[in-house]
Length: 487
Ligand code: AMP
Image 1 (cartoon, helix red, strand yellow):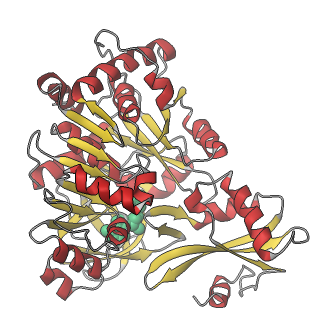
Image 2: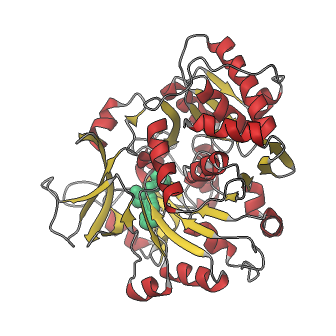
Image 3: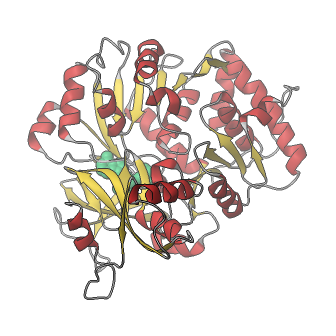
């Protein structure tokens, strides 16, 4: 059954049931159905025949979900843009995506609910369903296109491998809607008649509010980065007593430390803990493994698990051929979950994607190993990092720093604590005299960069240099620079 029909069935049979909770706002299935119909009619009137993406700039408001459904009901993909995105970056996303309209929760809220909408051309299997923008190494955000077929493959895997009680699950949603972990929450909830309980970034940043929300959410399902769980574990009360209904934790998006797994098992006895892995380009996740005491005792780092049915993982060597079993190479994902590519960027698409048998494959840029079908992810081959769960290309930060008038050249390096990236440091050669102290100059640059990049992409530390040390190739010597900050 079409995903939209599955959701429509819950709208019809359980209109009073809560589909979404965010702060003090509650939206029922009935409301979600009626308001997304009204917006769909409005979009058709506004955009006519143009099958252009529908962008929405917001955070965790119910209007975000209303817009997502309205867009796909009209056959248009949606592009979520988080409120934390500065205006210039929003403009870039609008340009790259050629979105036909930029909505906000307020605009959507102002559209009156009308009679029901008869979908003339809803999104089909091979049509783009959503476009998520991610950091691009040249300073330009790139839009990952995910089709309904891609999404269905993911949802089919999850629903086949795990029990989600129809009408009985509450999905704790921590990830922003611009990060595809939220896709897991949204569509597993809406297709099984469950409730999405969204944490806003304000709530997540305030421990009192956060733990109060967790105590009251009734969540049965959890999908987040390990970073978020680690943060929650600072509070000793973060345990089964706080989340008594919890059945299953999925972790994805970054390396899961064995200690995190061990602590989760200890604090939530009897609750499933899964380590899952996947890039946005392959729709949320492609491998998974239950984290058990035995697994933790056996492996460090933990494996990312076995690949989902219908999809293949190939570990490829430098010569483009699969490496012998157990050896290290690049993780290539091939299957129906692999995106058609980056929106309007055939150049980038060609570099990272290729046809593979009846489907497509994606070069992840991750080092990996396959031990008897169990996959291990061993870090990046390039300058992409994960900072507190956010995917960042260091080149994106560098390009945006170099674009500032005050800066002649910039190199950005991760600052690690143990294996984890804790912050980012920028090494900068100024184009003119320094303005004020190091601290004052850094503050000025942070403000200017903050007008171009989201807050998590602004380096914490700035180091001012007259010139960069060079390596034998005449490039800035990153190793030497890293050594100056004890890395
Ligand atoms: P994103 O597109 O934001 O989901 O980021 C995808 C990247 O995050 C992958 O290519 C990996 O580098 C990393 N990643 C995702 N899941 C895991 C995991 N379970 N363990 C280690 N790295 C992961």
